[in-house]
Structures are given as structure tokens and as C-alpha cells.
Image 1: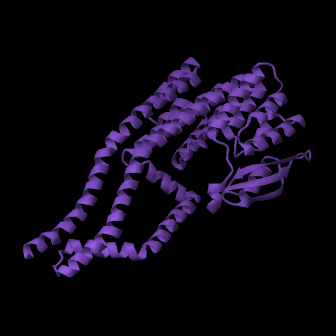
Image 2: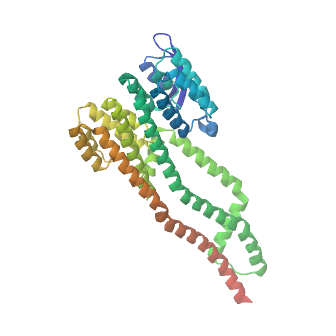
Image 3: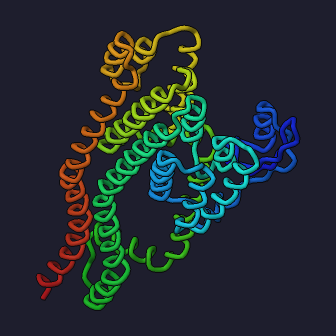
Length: 398
């Protein structure tokens, strides 16, 4: 769960932002550990039922912002002037407002990384940490370019996954729609014909008619039940145990689970490469990478890897011990450690997994199409048989 907060540091400087925690007391504790005195904290608006109205900045807008900021800074523009220009170009009013607040902080002497950190709903931990390393190394333009590439890859990855899932989703919606139409509209009409003819109905036909009667007369209750299940699942997903259970289930789904695993690994290797190249300490690289994977099972595993790194284990040994990471990552990480080019090795690995995802998404429709056709065929076939049986009996009676 996310909380918005206002806080002061030991110098009395007021800051605001978003923190994620299970409850407000834990959120306050985590902020105190960072040296902040919390003056106000409350659940972030846009959670639960109001989620569809949550203000957000599309990833594409953030990519353009990052690319243009890198170009402007490289051209010699001051960071305030660059941000002013980007604020004028912003098409998203919410993003424009947030950039205005960032400009005020920077004008007040706040480092850009800290100014961005106050807007955690827009700029994630990777973004903040890479900008911070760019400030410290004096290579912020290079870091921004690397961030833009990272975000572009993430955008393309998300698009591929959505496109791959759209066909199966469309087929299933069409199947449910056709079956609902037949059950609610056509079957009741046929029942009237059978009743008038006085034909003895087979058991399959009687079952279909009862289901049709239930759907036609109780569809509001069914709709409420479906909505209740969706809401309960969403709420369950917000709990640590529920999220872990659902995330574990997702990676075990045939075909789709394999694609999701490749996605998580690709995201990890790409993030690891970017953070390592930016000069972040190794433990922080693992800790920050774990937060952007999008699956609590992988997040927990990478968090355990961070603990092993703290204990003195090498990157390659840590990755080889993981049951979730492909063995080739640990093997190639060993090569990277010996050559001193760990970031390049992980960048190469990310490209490899991206190509693997390309192949998997291209074949997903081909693999799922027979399964979907069988499901559709069985569903429609049962209804056709249930209708034809009494009609055949009626013809014989005549």
C-alpha cells in the first residue's frame, strides 16, 4: 500500500513524497530511519475503488522527458532552464504540475536526485539512484541517456506482452459472449417449442435449460458475484501472503508462465546492467533491481541474493545458487567478473532474453490457438448436441 507524506529533515527542510508499506506506522518508521520527521501521512488517493481515476504519467512521456533532458544538459543548458522548457512541452497536466514542483526544489538548492525522489509515483528507485550516481560522478547526461534506453526497452517489453495476450483475451471474451447469448436468448425460445411438443428431454438438454434459466433470472447476482471476486482478488493481492500466492500461480500457468519468467529475467538483467554501469554499489544494485521485477517471488529471491553479496559471495556464485535464474546468467557473470565488464555482460544477456521474448510472443498465438479452439468447440458442441437431441426425438415422433 502507498502513503503520501510530508516530512522535515534535521535542517527543517520540508519534503513530500510517496512511501510504500503495509500500514502507516511502518511507513512512518521507514521514513524516520532516513532521518525524516513525519508531519503528515495518509493513504495515497487512487488506491482501491478509485484506482481507475489515479493520476499517472505514461511511460512514454517519461522516456521523452529523460531523452530531452539529456540532450539539453549536453547542449550546455542549466538544469533549471532545461526543466522549464520541458514543463512547457509537457502534454500531461499532472506531469507539468510535478515538474513545476521539481523546478522550485532545484531553484532552492535541492539536488535534482532528491527533488525527483519526492515524486516517487513518477520516478522509481532505479531512476533516482541512477540520477544520484550521475550527480556524484559528474556524468548525469550519460546516465540520463542510459536511463532513456532502459525505459525504452521496458516500454517495448510491456508492449510485446500486451500484444501477445490480446489475442487469447479476445477469443475468450468472444466465446463467453457467444455462449451467454445462446444460453440467455436462444435456449429459452427452444424450451417453449419443446414444451409445446411434449417431447421427453434428454438429461443433457435438461441441464443446459436449467443453466439457461439460472443465467437469465439471476444474472444481476452473477454480475455482483464476479465483481466481488475481482475486488476480493485485488485486495488479496495487496497483502504480502496473497501477492506471493498469486505471483507464484502466475509463473506456473502453462505457456504464459514461461513467458512471464523470461520477462522477469530480462527486466532483472537490463536493470542490473544499467545500475552497475552507473557505479552503484553492488548490494544496492541487487536491492534496487528486486523492486522493479513485478513479481514478489523474484523480488524475494533477489533480496536473498543481496544478503549473500553482503556476506562476501561473488555475483556469479550467488546467481548460480538461484533456482529462479537460468544457469547461463551465473556462468556469464563469472566471465564478466574476470574481465571487469559485468555491466556489458548483463546488457548482452538482457538483449538475449529480449530476443527470446520476441520469439516466445510470436509463437504464443500459435501455441494457444489450438487450445482455445478446442475449448470453444467443446462449449458450443455441448450446446448443439443438447438442442439436436430433442429435435431428433421430435422428428421421430412425427
